Amino acid sequence: MDGWYVGIETGGTKVVAAVAAFEDGRPVLAAPETVVPTGHDPHRTWDAVRDAVGEAAGGDEIAGVGIASFGPVNLRAGRMGPTPKRGWAGFPLVEECRARLDAPVAIDTDVNAAALAEWRWGAAGGADVAAYLTIGTGVGGGLVANGGTVRGLQHPEIGHLPVPRMPGDDHEGTCGAHVGCWEGMTAGPSLRRRYGIAGEDLPDDHEAWDLVAWYVGTGLSLVTLAWSPEVIVVGGGVMARGLHDRAAARMVEALDGYVPAPRVEAPHFGARAGLYGAFLLARSAAGSGLP
Image 1 (cartoon, rainbow, N blue to C red):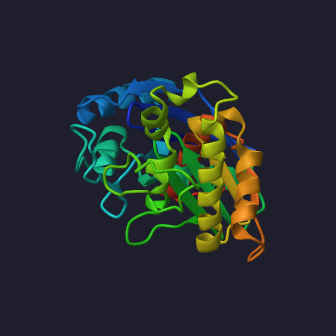
Image 2 (image 1 turned 135 degrees about the vertical axis):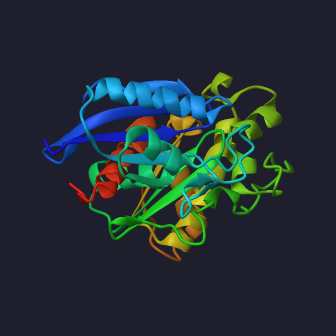
């Protein structure tokens, strides 16, 4: 064991934190993960994370911390962007975390971190270029290329690309910022507006899932054309109905043989891909490199 590492995944409703040591190249949790409500006071949330992490580490020194953050987030400054989440806009995530845990901190988006975990240990293992997408309350995407995540001017916002409309669909979308973007046409709020009921309450044979598979597959074709991944891992609550094969078939149809179609996989780590990616960020923060 070369020390304790802390992984933190922040989300719109909850923050998940855990302490792990690396054994045989993989993180082994010191204690069950802690879940803290995100709330509207990030200082209080970060205090709760500090207390939970300190208890799990038994007071021992922490080698590094990785934060997999919901967005928008300014990765260069280590602070939240202009999020509608009350109390969090502009919050200096890295600075406040470093002050509480007295350890080096690295940050990336939750979906970039998830892509990193799935590439290193999961469903995208062995790929030079791998994409991770989550289809849930929103649509987010991250990319790993040649061992590192893609982050430039900001971070990928693949969910806000415009997508072609399914024939006969006149829904304007629910994004609020863009008409007809992938998120606004496909994510959970779109299903609720279209059908008057939450997606999780729709039966398996409902027409909604044909529509979702069509839009997810169409979006995957855009990801393929833009990023050329060898594997696309697709998670999120909307995909829980086992839509991967149907979405992959639609992607192939949309690509129409112009380029090869990548593999489409469910995430190996399920809803915890971001947290496991955060442990890799923690290793990076500590200067330990990838296991």
